[in-house]
Length: 176
Image (tube, rainbow, N blue to C red):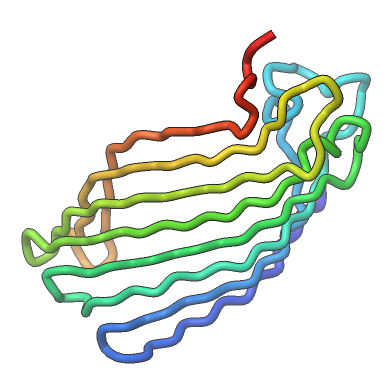
C-alpha cells in the first residue's frame, strides 16, 4: 500500500512565557486488517482490499509559563475530517469529523520533575448512520493525573493515570 503524509508545522515564540504551535496535515492511509471494520477477522470480507481513507487536520497548542516556572498551562485543539475512499457500501458509515480540545496544567515538584493534571474532550460526528442502527455520534472526556521528567537532555519520560467517560448521542445505543 502506498500511504502518504503531507504536514506543515509552525512555532511562534511570542514571549519567553508564551509559545504557540500550529499545523496542517493531509494523510492518505488504510486501516490495518483486524482494526476498524475488520476487527476480529483474519482476512478481509469477500476478499476486499483494506479500507483506504484520507484525513485533513488542522491543530495547534498554546503554552503559557516559562519552561523553568513552577506552573505551566498548555491548551490544545484539533479539527479532523476523515473520509473513506473504497468499499463505500460499508465505509460510508465511518466517515466522520472529530473536534479535540485539551488542557494540561503542569506543577514543578523538583528541578526536572513536574506533576500534571489534564482534561481532554473529543466530539465525534459521523456523516451518516447505517439504516436500522443507532447513531455513533459521541462525546468523550478523558481525565488524567501524572508526572513527566527529564532524566538527561536526551532522556525524558511521562506517565499518566486516567479515566474515560464516553456519552453517545443516541440514548438507545446498545439496546435491541
